[in-house]
Length: 244
Image 1 (cartoon, one colour):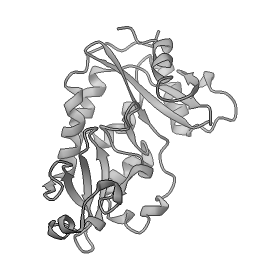
Image 2 (image 1 turned 135 degrees about the vertical axis):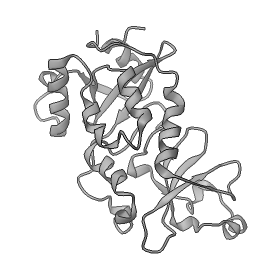
Image 3 (image 1 turned 120 degrees about the vertical axis):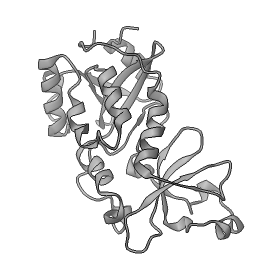
Image 4 (image 1 turned 30 degrees about the vertical axis):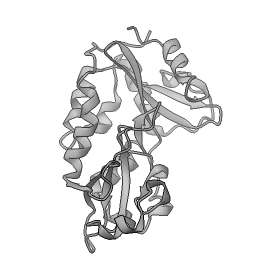
């Protein structure tokens, strides 16, 4: 399918209230709070006719090779979305099996999130760097899943929403009050960071909703890349060109 701004706008209207879609910096209204690095991206892609945000991901290409493959296959320029409340985000439009999908990236953090400030130094350095230099969350717009969650959506496994009873928690090999969910796969399962190691960097853990008492210890970056890569296997290969 041809990805046009009109097609994207119509798709967006099912999930958010858009007020603007900008493909170039010249289309940004005065006073809109757009991060300067995003303005530079829009300027660069206007000049080149292809997606330029991938440059911001280069520092993570070794840990996330599936993302590098995605950028090589889908070289569409990004669109800046402004909603009616003036919240801005970057949209990554692409097709898989001829169907349109949208990833959304929120503005990078300017400081450690207040709720997680005390444990922020224990989050893997490059994961923190992603949130402060690329996006504070990068997920499917339709479901807020299949990518690193915005920090506002991080949660501890001890919170009521995970419905882990006291008996199950006591038998688990981790302290659920020290496990943070940072990625949702859309099916009820979460990739987590386990802060249990004393004074150490958080490690990877998968919490399976259908087997809540037996979380799986994993290599965090490998699991992150694998979960993102599940969907990208079906991404259509499209040559670079501007949106219609």
